[in-house]
Length: 172
Image (cartoon, rainbow, N blue to C red):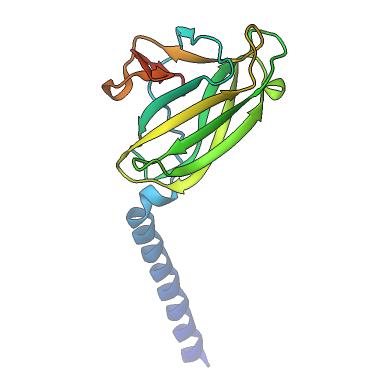
């Protein structure tokens, strides 16, 4: 009887040891996969905003991710403390123009100086992606805008409004 009890203690101790070894190996092998990182673009704050996004305005920003998985992208927006018209369509496209994520937001729902999130929830590669924001139905003096930083030139590309390039980056 005593021999059976000693044998069970050895099995229990061996199982606990194996559990800890496997846990440590898994932790180090899958570290990047299980860690949640809130990635910021590194812009370091806005120093102004774009022109008003009236109907048909298209704003693009090239983005290169240094993570494997993107949960969401936050875009800093402003309403000029007024009720605005229209909507904005936000999309993320890969190098081939394929839409990876998209969202439409009514301008009336946007709060001043807020961050609007584009849910991506996808694994991304090393390529350069394009964040595209299109204004639909926005009227002059009743449209939202986006924050920018003119001192930082992300990826050396800047951003563009209706195809015209500007130095700086959107506040992401």
